[in-house]
Length: 138
Image 1 (cartoon, rainbow, N blue to C red):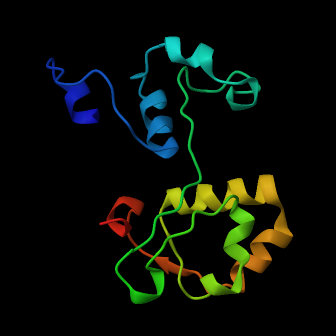
Image 2 (image 1 turned 180 degrees about the horizontal axis):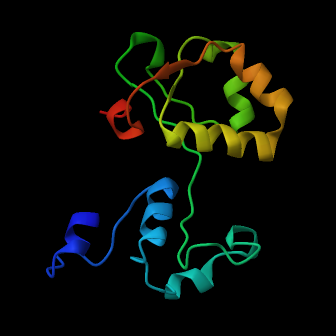
């Protein structure tokens, strides 16, 4: 993105990136205001509470994915909440990415569910994988 900006040739208009990269793009004056019509459809709790440094924002979802091939997982039962992941049956069977996505997941869980939840989650022996979440999903 930075190299493209230095040239007189632009190949893309929109980029999906991390908050860290957004800071670099802002610093270099490469952001342009854009207000998505879909933004008006978001509930108030999903909209930024105050003006952000960036003229755009994105929403993220705390999601779960699983490997359906092991014999112990023949009939997946979807969890109703993240608290369901504290069930002992999930101990040692979960992983989280070590990238900024994992860090944001932990921060969101801390903000929404509290420190006690994260301490109980640590007892679940969640593996930390040094790869992008998309790679974890295959």
